[in-house]
Length: 159
Image (cartoon, rainbow, N blue to C red; front, side):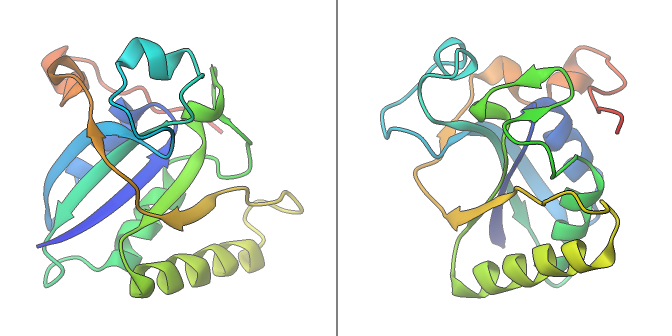
């Protein structure tokens, strides 16, 4: 199994759309990219920790490729809005890809460049960060699989 980590706004929706992908065997909400101390949801939500809400994915690369996961990532959020997705505003909702090795970094950079060249977002700049993985802090249990637990259809934004 291989690990990938993405931030694309509220982690409930990000987790939900990745759980739908054949080959994804686990998706866990958490925090990454800020100070290395454990943080609570309330602290991260307040925006002072530097952490992004992320989803760490375990996937079978014989079934789904990292490039295919990036396609899902790009299709399910607006990568042109700095530090926000829909009504969620703050650096904790930034568009970010945390790479686990040099191969993921290269694939992510090429994927971002291809999206830019595609013209899908017109002249808007793709602001998605691509950085090396940092310590993953799992979110509290009540956040895991939140939409399904609460019988909510989605928290997906429209753009």
